[in-house]
Amino acid sequence: MSTKNGQQSDGQVERGTFAVKAGLAQMLKGGVIMDVVTADQARIAEEAGACAVMALERVPADIRQDGGVARMSDPRLIKEIMAAVTIPVMAKVRIGHFVEAQILEALGVDYIDESEVLTPADESHHINKHSFTIPFVCGCRNLGEALRRIAEGAAMIRTKGEAGTGDVVEAVRHARSVYGAIRRISRMDADELFTYAKDIQAPYDLVKETAELNRLPVVNFAAGGVATPADAALMMQLGVDGVFVGSGIFKSDDPAKRAHAIVQAVTHFNDPHILAEVSENLGAPMVGINVTELSEAEKLAERGW
Amino acid sequence: MSEVRLGVLALQGAFREHIAMLKRLNVEAAEVRLAQELDDLDGLIIPGGESTSMGLVAERWGLVEPLRRWVQRGKPTWGTCAGMILLAENATGQKLGGQALIGGLDVTVNRNYFGRQVDSFEADLEVPALGDSPFHAVFIRAPAITAVAQGIETLATVASLGEETESVIAAVRKGPILATAFHPELTDDLRWHRYFVKVVTDYKSCTG
Image (cartoon, rainbow over all chains, first blue to last red; front, side, top):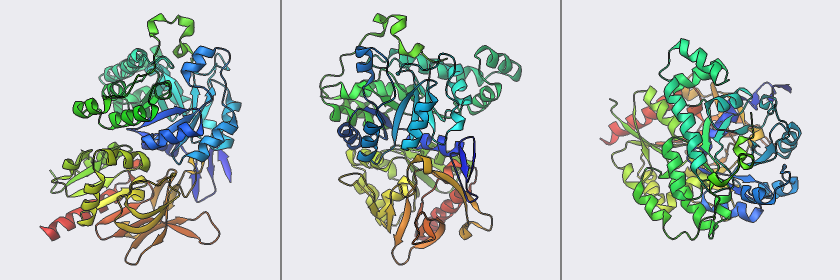
């Protein structure tokens, strides 16, 4: 057994390669990843058709309300959730906290979210994600941030939005920023791409690859503020590959029904008749916080560099 | 334009990758989300993804029965990973309460046989049906076939985890039905897609 950059090879099979890391995200596309805080909630999410769950102690709305330092969840809770469902289980670590990531890898979670929703552990460095066998998803607000995370080894990206608000405006802003930039660079010549890469502080090779593909080199989900089936379909029509729903489900009146409706909306995001049908009679959504009422210091999306 | 028209089930998962592979072969491919979109298709690919998610969305819009009829009519169908689970007559390691299966392929599939994501792997497989050079296969939280009925042709095997057998089945064919535990759509190797397009073309010329 040899280990190189988180890759393991025993001669016949190779584990932890970028293809298998990015490949799991490709399998999640067109799906909904739901925040859950108990094994029972994980079961509800699985029954509603979630393609994965995010195991955490508090949903972002509660983290926001409680204040204090938000950290990796108790491994016991994560193990209970892993035992309860057959779909992939993700869990969050603080930005730069590579030891929390080592612990989650030891637990065998399927994906690690290096997340701005938790309190950052390092104010200048993100985790070197190449050194892990387990894949990482990271948040971004724009193309430069997305490509910096991919350079560090992220195998999946999510636009940050503003977690725990139920206000989709920031998710829209970040998705428009990323996809607008991709549309612009796909028309740039080589000279312009060099300068653009420098301006957005992203590696030239990844900027060039993105321009040639006319999409990000890895899967990109929307996150932060999705609360209704219409929000989810809006993000899909803007170009994301799937959605994370955090507080939006289990802070609503009827989580099972809303979760099921959002799953249907992500598959049928281009069919307004189906969207109308699944949006009907869902009970009250999470109350939410208007993002314009948050101070800059209260915005989680500002975390990450 | 190609003489056959394929569909890729687009409820959830890696359908875009399959369509891109078919386009490289100049084969027309459509996304299938509703039952009426199966009409006029000559073959169907059920992609990788989460089989529980796909099963639940299919049930909600009445797609499970039309898919069962499609397979029972002997229409060419290829399931990759989650698609293989959905085509299996028996699946073990399912979620509590089981899940909706399409069936039609008389095999037993163990869901996530190879474990969680840390155990996902790439390996070279010998596949005589595709020629001499091995196929580099990507297995992601992959299932394996642990039992087959008579008449099921094994196309590829891969080293097993247990002591009792050396290998488990990773690809099978029965007539117009093809199933692979791994993801040819995540590679640059077009041979599996070409193989399936030939199955579809042969079937169409037989049945007129």
